[in-house]
Amino acid sequence: MDKEDKKIGISRREAIKVFGLSLAGFATFFVGREIKGFSEYDPSNPIIDVIYHKVPGMTQRAFVIHLTDLHFGGAEAYVNAQVLDTIIGKINQTTHQLGATPDTTAFIMTGDWLSKEEKPRFHIQAPNNGETDIKDVPLMLEILQDLKAKHRVGVLGNHDHKHAQRIELMKYLTHSGIQLLDINSEFYNGDFPIPILGLPDFTQFSDYYSPTQIQEIATALCLYDGPQIVATHNASIVDIARLGEFVKNVRFLCGHTHGGHTKHGLLVPYALSDEYKSHFVRGIYRVGNNLVQMADGVGQHPQAAYRQIPAGIIINVYGG
Image (cartoon, rainbow, N blue to C red):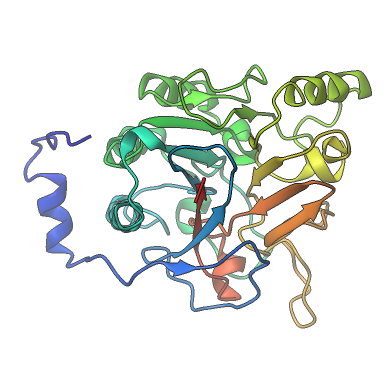
């Protein structure tokens, strides 16, 4: 899905070369287990975990790139244009090594595309008080177009919902070809072989789901016997709304925790959200006959960077 760079001064790729950024390392491979190790935080060189799913009856492999908590911003942000371009290059390198093609690959982004302004309670302060300028969003989407994935879906996170330009963000995303599944709690309407459903974050809309609605969602998921994906910003749909008790063969893709920055530590009394009480923080967890996948996130909050929680991306390989 190559596209010509915008000719404003020098091209984006030429500008990035000036900064001397290069693709770094190869993918680290894990097989369906909780990730416990920590590494020095470097958003431009995220750990890529590749997880295989043996699926009887699938005649060809399908690939799912799970990216979360980008918090894209300007030049001073943790994830800016140069960093994001390097991330996309590393993902493409990995999927190519795995034998993926754009037609067999889905990109799923589980929220917090950008950051809202906030008053940090920790001593490290994010650039521009963490606020993403909506004018930076087109550049983010231009770079994401380089990702070798035909199927593009996403949901919104708490930062996206609370951002002053939420509506503009949604317009940019949909116009770029990304289907926002959580807006109407709908399934992806492309020809990807794994059904993908998107649901709003229950903690963001605490009165959103009634028991009847949860049962209706479960009924829709149970119409299909094979593997399915539910994308939402955090694990509240399983942890609080209890959807995992009524379905099977579902992989819940979530983010929000940035790999654990909301969890209190022995010598780190501050957590980003004291209200976040989920048991699902980092790694992969089994819930009944389902799995909850918590990706590390890329655009880290200062608290995560301080604790050296690594930036991370997960690629799921189905049928292998």
